Image 1: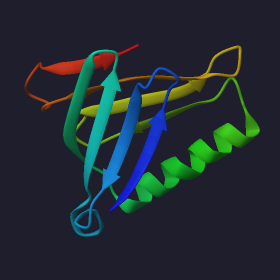
Image 2: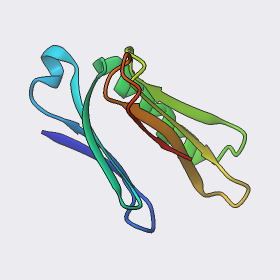
Image 3: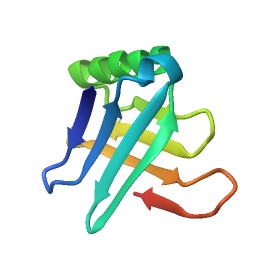
Length: 110
């Protein structure tokens, strides 16, 4: 199992958990903690999508391009996260996760 943890100064975080069945099916577990709210859900990605996201995120961080932004979203439109720099060079993360495309239950972070 592999984990990717993106954590803020105040312990808020976005965690991407890749278990053994990710390679076969693309099943990914997402954990999001924002303030007093915590959600854990399943989203689906291909290996190429996550590999491309990681490369783009690494490039964005090393080059510190303030005007660029990076989006990670799943194919079912239940998970969408945007990364961008503010004027001080801090990474700002905004996005949402929904239980399903049909239902209106969601956690939005801005």
